[in-house]
Length: 248
Image (cartoon, rainbow, N blue to C red; front, side, top):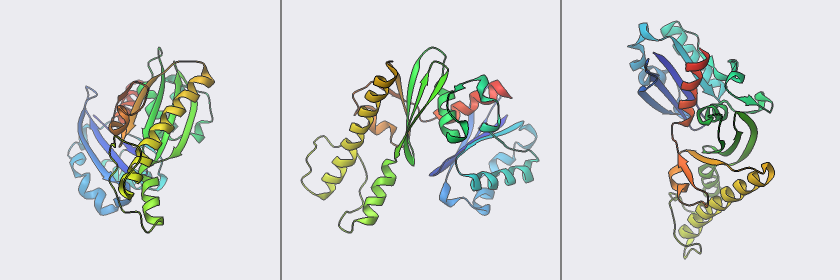
């Protein structure tokens, strides 16, 4: 069995993966809540499999959290963790940009999607809203735009008369009050951003793509954009599983 994890700016996902490459246990912790005590409590389940763990693999965009988790697993399981960028990913994907400038999660997403046959645009609704472009086995690069929840929280914190709202679908565009106006701006505004980015990527590459949505708000936008898409909430984790299968 292996332990794999995705350390993001908003949350940390850690999974126990069996010999059949199926997830046996998944734990999610808010990144802001990570502490020594929290780790000890939340991850005690994984210590029960101490004698069965072969590898511990992470994608991480938060170095200090990665260090804390690496120390925990090394001290408890006597296994050194591996970060996916330290592996020879070129066996799975042809990265056409500076690898140091691409987040590990985005590379894991791309490897999770890649099949060598189709072109993909992966849209990840995380702390940032990212677009990654894959053509067959080539990673061409992508786009980083402000995250939806991050932008919404910033607006609420900076504008005294804007109340906290939960973003959800709104059927009309013109709001009749502040809540509706903000909800429309974020819901339809980001739907427009997504549609326009897809259009521009297609124009630049002169190619067609399959669209994969992942991250917290993926379900919200699946039926709100003009392009057919599929939702895969475990894309990052599945990408790491594919890496462990092929490179370890």
